[in-house]
Amino acid sequence: MQCKTSYCELRRKEIINVCDGARLGPICDLEMDVGTGTLLALIVPGPARLFGLLRSAEELVIPFGCIKKIGEDVILVEIEP
Image (cartoon, rainbow, N blue to C red):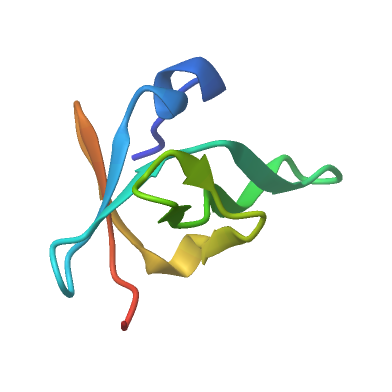
């Protein structure tokens, strides 16, 4: 079964790592294959710095194979810490 979800809908979902329960944050970008339209990875902002006020310049790239479930409110991923 194929699921269709818009980028706007994905951006509203929180990403949770099932390995340690960490909240990774919302999606800030996507990596796609423009030839096929296939989603390759989700990109989330790096960890917060300075008491959570500033974001790191680093981004976390989550390969499509690490996505375990896309739910109503969250996206579950499996990334080893």
